[in-house]
Length: 249
Image 1 (cartoon, one colour):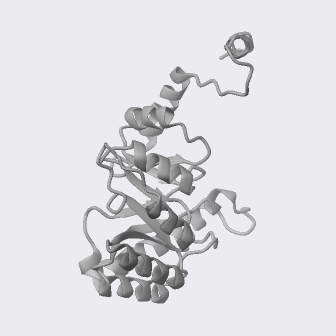
Image 2: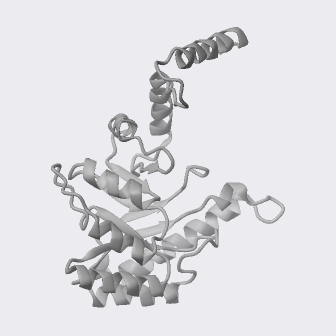
Image 3: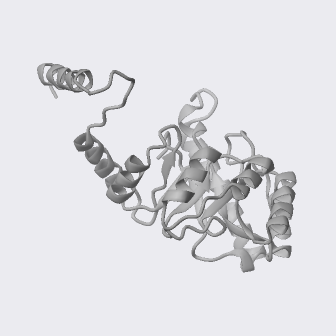
């Protein structure tokens, strides 16, 4: 878009905002541009992977459903309990919600205690994956599942190099998987989270992007190998192996 067309484009947007019936802060979304961005994203994805929409700071259910339909995905990543509660009330039985950060056990308990009946048949016990980053948190969610009388899905965060948390080595991960295997009545293993934005943000003087990506993928694959070889009863085709945040996709 040349400068003249670009200037006119934003002039038109500005007029739309000024002519809006209420003088309040609001967001104007160009759906044509959004559609183009979604198509660009889809064309760059590996066909064997799935795209998960991040519901982080714009909890507009209409916008979320629009992007879900255009991107052909029912998978979301959620970061806040109020968003999770609202979505569980509005989404149908096809949605899959993965927590993007570990939730304090009191927050998870509040979510289940304050559930609102959903006419769309959303099952908060089968369609929510809680992120687990430590053995202590795993024990807390195990106790919560027992108190609720229903099993909870748990996705295990592994440290692929970002060092924000998660299981840092195969031994600690193995202990975690063993506890899940021993408590299948209450815990359902749903996969791994290996968040890797450090790959594009780490200064090259410390490590190249190619080396960082290789190290992250090597550890991730080692975790998957451990799961398949030592805990085959937890391994199946429906697991979520999440990675590649928006900086690295």
